[in-house]
Length: 319
Image (cartoon, rainbow, N blue to C red; front, top):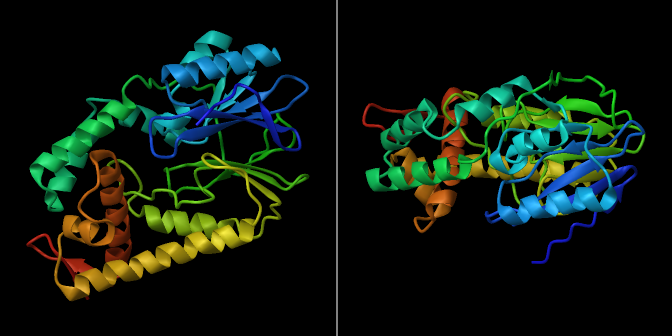
């Protein structure tokens, strides 16, 4: 796929730049919110040479320098180049406090990775696959130092830059994932909360929410009253059909919960065995990590509501 440093107009006062990422999504979207005092850049991309070169060239061609960098959530493909942008342009960084903390929690070598390994082993994942998936995760986070943050975003605040954008904190994919909504134009900068073609990963991670799927479903429900005309996602292309996409994502997880229940009704299973039943056994370490933590989020949701239980042998049984 060809990537261009040209900025594409995607909504009133908003331009998009696609940067490549070394993951199945292929690219991450950065959005430039126009402002008379200087643009606000939403998200920063992943630190690979191709992405870095495209970003610098795009900003050079336009003659723009971001006056603010706003990070939707602390996943490496969204904040990875933040510290470099901050150093290069001196722009302040705005993000939710919980996301800034997460950016530090998952740096390579931090205890959260040992905790993840212990949880995966306890859920029945074979030791060699645990090592592979944890090691691949730490490699993804390498070279993504957290930026210093000058402003911690709060739910429902209105930004004083970029043109009347409201901050919506939508936990689920990340502990304090941020969307931006502009009521005047009906534009929603959705980050990874509302992806157009795939469902965002909703995983149970160490030091994260104890019930991330419940967070996500509540976040979806909380958006239903918005008059959104255009959704600008973190991956994939901008789209219409906001209400329909909310319902599709809700329905997907309801169906997945039912599939988990059916898997443990057939026979008591470990978390890893449920994961294999849902996603298969031929995943690479990158995708297996996401499959496992998402499986655990569904198991946790059902267990907390008394619909299944985990017994002393580490297997889940329907209640």
